[in-house]
Image (cartoon, rainbow, N blue to C red; front, side):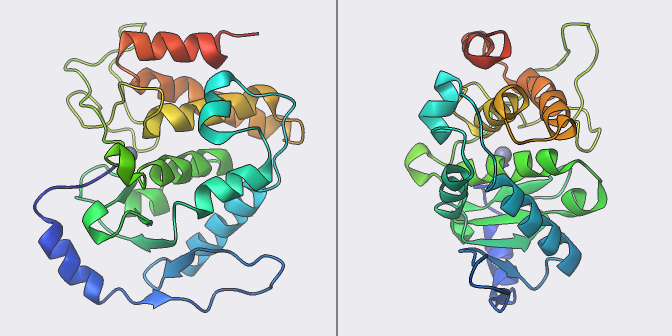
Length: 240
Ligand SMILES: [Zn+2]
């Protein structure tokens, strides 16, 4: 999610009190470029650091063309560089309220991501949490207008005629700003990332690969432009 409208003034007032906690580095070996605000629960910060450290170990046998274009090869060092060059701090914010799980608010700094209570209170697998984190890191890209979402259609149904819901919160997606019309956006790129991990990771457990596939197969439903979806299908979903 990316927020750019007028309630930013209020959010800025909040930000003044959101002092950044910088004393988190516990070892030089694991020195991380990003920091957590004090309003992020300690267990959630620990979990996210562990998630990102796991991501930084991944290796793969190959990648799709779109993965290569966006993320490079499948290796942990490349993923780490991708994330840490984009996100410098992580805080907690309502992100406009409603069903947001996380967001970047450009007026508060494009290299800051925020998680909401929806990120904290719902339990999802590590690879799904990383999907959210990499989704938000894509929103840091000012040169691309922070890759804004597209509005999902109304009604919004899958191939089986079922109403589309968020896999994270269960909320209805019809008419919500929670879709993408390009493979390169936040939903598109994180979906490509997970589908590649599900197919090509060589040092992931079967559970991680299965989870990556489940979430990728769900998220491609949010790509509402037919050409963009076809490009992603050809790139990695239906490719051998
Ligand atoms: Zn987003």
